[in-house]
Image (cartoon, rainbow, N blue to C red; front, side, top):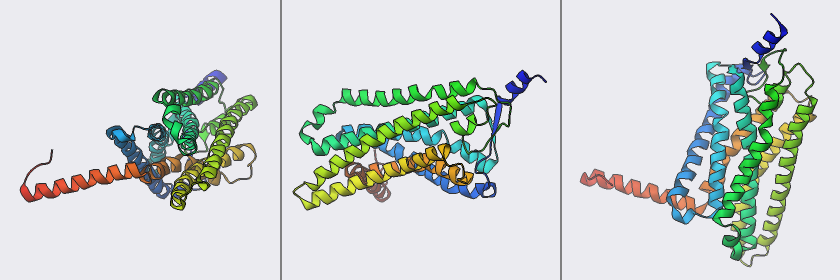
Length: 327
């Protein structure tokens, strides 16, 4: 068989390993991962439904929250179902084009997640530090432009990833030592020098992550400074509690992302199972935490959900007592 045919064959199908060294635990690892996914899907769908139904929630914060929820749904759905097939059904084979598609969704929507965290931090900054101009600064048109810019940035910077990998020859192993098609895990399988391709990916990730992280940090520093100046101690504690929970979610996202980035660059001695496990946490935990922190802990959303459940409970009780159906 000619080298060309070998190369063509090698790019038709790839095989995912999962978590190297922990294959015997895949079934058990899949259980908490599946639980995280179910909560993420239900929580984010609930946020989208509540914001759509309740007109009082049509505010900048909740519009950005809906954008974040859509991003979380796409991000978790692009990884978890395929990962669970690997863990529970032993389905390791993945078509090369499907692998590239999954890679694009993972990396581009991760960048969007970072962008929406920044947009929400800016919204909180304006709401707390300049509340009288909040609605004039963050108009619906401006919110749409910010959302569009975040999406366009994610697509523009990470569309080259699958295009670059599609052009590379793969004449080595077709085994991807990962639970999903991660860019660095796939590019290592090429049989040519990929230094420039790796540098592009690492540069884009570092620029987006560092810029977003820097401006998020500045926003929350200014927010905290304003909070400590509030005349009411109760208001200060409430604002601190809200900001503190937001910062915790952001720290989980960025700390795991930075660990993954540094491991690719410098962490050659990090055990692969540790690296891959953290890489999974980096994709699964934020979509799980975001609905809880930004949704359940938000009073307006919590009150709406509790009110709807109370009406449903009273309706069921009344229908059982009188035999009537609630409309």
